[in-house]
Amino acid sequence: AQKVTQAQTEISVVEKEDVTLDCVYETRDTTYYLFWYKQPPSGELVFLIRRNSFDEQNEISGRYSWNFQKSTRSFNFTITASQVVDSAVYFCALSTGRWSNYQLIWGAGTKLIIKP
Amino acid sequence: EPEVTQTPSHQVTQMGQEVILRCVPISNHLYFYWYRQILGQKVEFLVSFYNNEISEKSEIFDDQFSVERPDGSNFTLKIRSTKLEDSAMYFCASSLGGWGYGYTFGSGTRLTVV
Image (tube, rainbow over all chains, first blue to last red; front, side):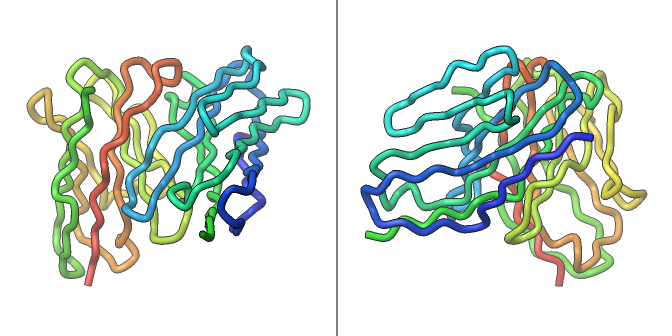
């Protein structure tokens, strides 16, 4: 079975703090993709990153970084020096490929509140 | 950058009425999806569409729902007889070839059933 767990329902930090959003996934497939999306209060889904199961290199994009640990089935997302504009709901998602027609399986989301 | 366009952005309808949510996927994409997000909850898969037919659907996608790609550009989701619990944000997405190519989401249609 495929499943994505985001155990943190809500995180609140003060601006400029670093914050890590956890994502744990389950799948029996050896080939899969993991995604992070941001959903600001306006409601749209903003793509942040896509990572395939064969690439365990960590990725950094500006203040954002992602840590993919296949051994622990985790794909955590860290925001460094958080800003108020980072306040949003963040979703982790899994796509296990052609047998599921590439549909995305979503975590429940983590609501991130950055206080000024 | 190419976009997925959804219309309307917000629709209010009375319970029992039919609604059609419209999406224009990116023109060279091959896979199309509808997802639903009830307010404050997770995003849920409804249906995927490939090669002019439904390729997979979830338990949510019952007989009240249907999808069409009537003219090669639009991709529609029809709800025949809306219920209060159909109130949600509906997202359309398209993909060139599935996961490796990523997914492009529309900005969503907020459906309110009263």
